[in-house]
Image (cartoon, rainbow, N blue to C red; front, side, top):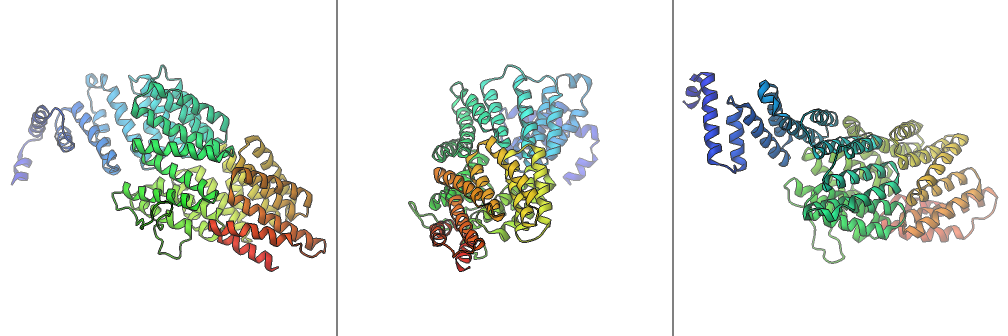
Length: 556
């Protein structure tokens, strides 16, 4: 009956009726609740009062975005955008700021949906709206930079952040955020000293900030300093900075920041052989992902103190140890429609499994991550996944691995991601030598070596020396191989990277074994001794494929 009565009212009368209801509700609720905001948006949307309709549709869209209901948010915000186009000339004159808010909110929602092209388009439209203050303009440039970062375009991201810094006289929070964003882009490109300097400039603004702003800026700044310290081989400093970052992110409730800190801490602790501490971080990642979706946390067992609880999916014997921690988080991200999160986690699982030597499992995740990242336009992940997948495929004797490696190297070079380019060149050199092109392999190795020296990142230098040592040994250049492996062993010992050290010890054993065979001598006893040093580390870190390779070497 209500619907029949409503439909019998003329459209103009309906609009007037909705307007009267909206005005009465607004007058009665100066501070409307979430439910009342929805009611106001509904009635103003159906009234003739377009500016008020835009305001409440915007508020409704922002509320939906906060609840991660992105489809609803986009619907509300697109409705607000349509009403902007219908404003009269007089109404449009004062609606520039409102239009900027609508387009910015749409950009933020598309970014959350990993729809990078639409997000960037909205931010660029918002930049054309007038009037915009310096801080609003700088914030839009920062968001454009974030889009470029997620695409893996560090140089373009840095350019956007620099544009933001030139937007005018900024408030301290805006200056700090842009400096830290620029530091993050520089770290992506491998410019660690510039990244550290930019982070310290951003952190210098902290005394001028409110308590909440201070915690947020300190969280981002300490995370960057932790990453740079890890690259410099100062692992203790890195762990301390990342621990401070995690504390601050918890204080402000930044789920993405908390998750990234857990990841970085877990990887560092694992590399050092501190499995209990690594497990704590990995459990934190999956627990956070489940809580974000409003689910119960995965079972944590009854462990206390330094004894970690069993990992999620611990009963699934098909999953290797590191995979168990991340697998339920990946499932949770996909179930929640978090496309960017799913790509990141899938790629990270693949890379961690590769580090553990679980190449078959790694390849599955990396193939999926490549497809998904390619669909999103996340080119840095595509480049990284191609390089690792290519290394796995080539090691299995499949020549298509070289093609994957070449694709990854070209993309890393185009993006200017120098740390990734070094690893890509090294892996490509290994593949080319395996398929009978030692001259090209030597050239790849030289390019990687010079770039690694220029970057000065200790973990990367360790990998470079270790792989170049392995390549030299494969060509029978024993003295060169020994020099590289000596350098790798020194770096890994200094930084405490147990995984790299164990693999270097194994490479030493393989070198002595190969040289003895080539020279027609008996295998020296130090082969068994070196393998004996590496085996306990492989076992502790769950590097089962490396254990198998070590046993196979002893059996030959």
